[in-house]
Length: 251
Ligand SMILES: CC(C)(COP(=O)(O)OP(=O)(O)OC[C@H]1O[C@@H](n2cnc3c(N)ncnc32)[C@H](O)[C@@H]1OP(=O)(O)O)[C@@H](O)C(=O)NCCC(=O)NCCS
Image 1 (cartoon, rainbow, N blue to C red):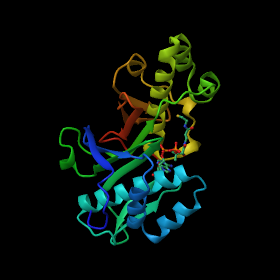
Image 2 (cartoon, protein in one colour):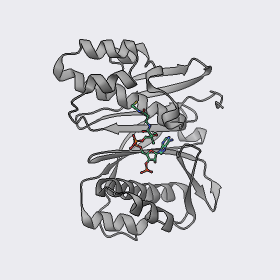
Image 3 (cartoon, rainbow, N blue to C red):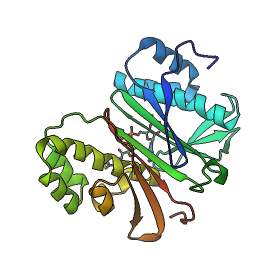
């Protein structure tokens, strides 16, 4: 933190199954944002400038700067040695001196809340769970939306839609965001973005009944198991997903 003067705007929020999850405070704060921008490299600053909305600029700068500081610490490298590359659908990965680093991470932001999940790709990082790979994290503020049903018909399976239709009004929004964040975390773990249809993902039945963790397999790659963890709390819905140890890499 030598290059910043603002108090860190992120905290270690929780540990989940071998991954560390940071919470990033995205409340507007000009001093913090200036400190964050100072931590970005040239490419990141240009990217930030290309966002039209002030909110998007803030989310990117505060999360990316937090990620930079924490990854450099975990990887034992300098800010200059640390870089980022991008997979085909835009999922970022870390590099040290241009070589891909043995660490997984994923970032999500929604309103005043950002989450960063980080897991080292070493068995020792999670002896009880082995390797935590291909991570995805999602956070969603539960803001009111007028057309829950319409949006739901685009992203939820028939069973999930029935569950939503049966929920009492005040529970419906909570359930909507819970299911949404679980699917989004899974899509982000896989890394293929919009090319994977959320409607085709049927969340594990125990999770639909309220379980906080579950396992998922895509029908076209049944040997691969994805672990889902509901991280939701009072302030937001959130979820973590990762590919289970021993599962072959798809594609
Ligand atoms: C990137 C994507 C996966 C998520 O975007 P989003 O909802 O705006 O965003 P989040 O805030 O959760 O995540 C954004 C972060 O994910 C990371 N990311 C970018 N592309 C990614 C990808 N293909 N896979 C995983 N993570 C990705 C980036 O770190 C990005 O933050 P940054 O630009 O500040 O570094 C996007 O492809 C998407 O929205 N897919 C939607 C899938 C869908 O239909 N969802 C409906 C509900 S289930």
